[in-house]
Length: 304
Image (cartoon, rainbow, N blue to C red; front, side, top):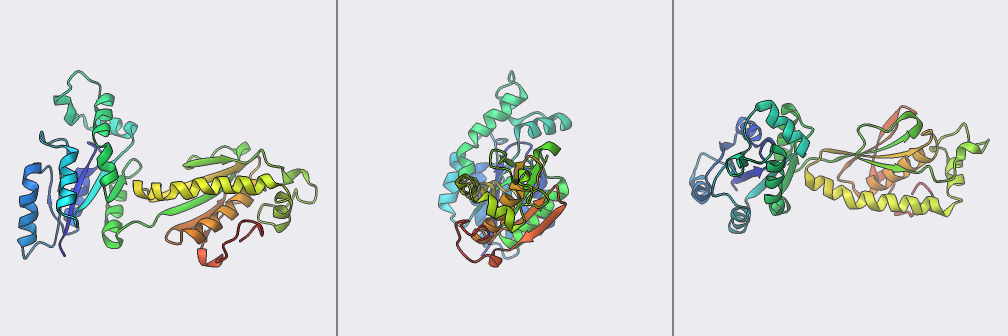
C-alpha cells in the first residue's frame, strides 16, 4: 500500500525542514501544493509504478487553504496520514525574528504584530490539530533532533514516549527540565523520626512510616490520576519525553518514595512507554520495567 503523508501546521514550526528530511529518506515530496491539486497528486502517486511513498505540505501560504480541505481529504482518503507541526508561540516569534521572514498572514493583516499573527494562525488550526494522526511539537528540537524523530516515526509508526519520574529537594532548587512539579512537603516528614533520618524513601521502614497516614495514599492516587490522564495527551502532542517531578524539603524521604511508587505503576500500566525513575539528590537513575510489578496493587503493600 502506498504511503502518502499530508503535512500541515504553523508557519515556522519546521514543515519545510521536515519535507527535506523526508526526501532524504526516500519520499517524493512537494512543498506548498495548492489544495485544489491534492486529489490529482494523490491519483498520480497511486498510479505510479515507481513512487511508493510521498509527502506534501499544504498550509496557509495558499490563498485557498482552509481546515475544511483537510477534513474532506481525511474522509475521502482514509489511509492518508495527516501530520501537524506546532511550536510554542515564543519559539515561533524567535524563529521569525532570526530568519527575518514575514509571517504568511502579514499580507492579510499588515498592521498586526507578529505575536497576533501567530495567534491568529493557531486559532485557525484549532480543529485540524484534533484531526491529525501525528502532532509534532518542534519547540525543543534541533534540526538533527527533527530528523531523528521523523525517522523513528516512519520506522516504528510512533515514537516510544520516555517517561521520567524524578524526586528532588526544594531546598536545592526545582529541576529545570521538569514538565510537571508536585509538592509533597505537606505530608508527615520521616526526617524528624530519629531512626529514619539517615534512610531514604527507598527503604521499607520509611514507607511503613509514611503509610501510617491516610493522606499519603490519597495524595499518591491524586498524582497518579493526573499522570494517567496526561500521558496519552503528551503522546498525542508528539512529545518524545516527559518528566514528572516530585519534591519534598531535602529530596531524601517523601519525594523518593513517591517517585519509586509512581514510576512502578506507570511502567506496569503503560508498558508501551520507557519509564525511568531518578533521584536527583542521590544521583540515582534507572529503568523501570512493568513486568517486574505484575500485581494490580493499590499501594496497600507500598510496592505493588
